[in-house]
Amino acid sequence: MVTPVLDAPNALDRLQNDYLPRLHSLVIGPGLGRNEKLLDLLPGVLSKARELQLPVVIDADGLHFVNLMPEMVRGYQRAILTPNVPELERLHRAVLGCPPPEDRHAGVQNLAHALCNVTVIAKGMDDIISDGKSCIACHEKGSPRRCGGQGDVLAGMIGTFSHRLHRAVLGCPPPEDRHAGVQNLAHALCNVTVIAKGMDDIISDGKSCIACHEKGSPRRCGGQGDVLAGMIGTFSHWSHSVTGADDTSLPKYSPTLIAALGGAMLVRRCARQAFRKCSRSMLTTDVLREIRTSFAALFPVD
Image 1 (tube, helix red, strand yellow):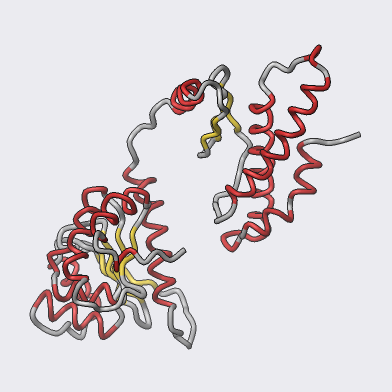
Image 2 (cartoon, one colour; image 1 turned 45 degrees about the vertical axis):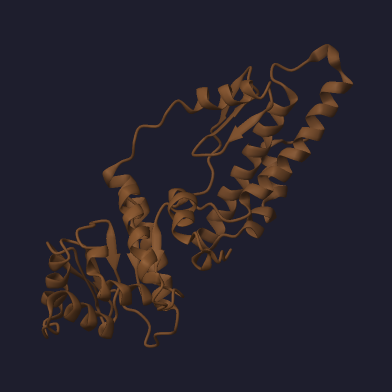
């Protein structure tokens, strides 16, 4: 989804307060352009990213603005710059006042060190990576052809990996009691059922609170929540129909609680099966293809 927020008169306020707090990592550069107005915007965006401790990847046109204002990233050790050969030369001149040396390892490490340990990945025959302290090379063989947009893909992948590694290595604040939060919300809404999606889905109608521990997929693709909503709608019709037909044998949990649990279990099972086949390329359409077999496994019919 493309949102033309950069053209809005209150762009900085919206980015700082509406967009950045919802992100896991921030990639700046691909498709950005070099409009001078961005010089008034980017320092505020990066300042907020620092405040939120967001991993930041800067590529393409974003590096142009780093050349003009290196202080935007200097010292932010969750920032990664991804220059190609000419971009590296321009960065080196802007930050250190001289062209990079012939020794690429030394040049990249000097640049990263001068930026106070910002990580730099210099793309080339071998990608040279340094945080100013250590320097490593990626010798994984690539393609003889380098096509337009390949660097944008790299920037996006680094952003994803950076978020995951910072969570795994640096940890995150201890979670609050999700069960209590969901149940309090459902109770405050006078027993509307709430399903809070997460590592485990927490479901409450304000009276009872249960968790769906069905293992899902490592990848969450766009549209998966829509599938869940549709499945819960179907299960809700079934559970209310059964409860209304025989009031003498009321279940322990409410029909909506049962519907939410059934939908959550089914989507998670479908996603897990789809991921086994498609791995990181899994799409919501792949999840839909697994409904028949997953439903039959979870809810067998004689």
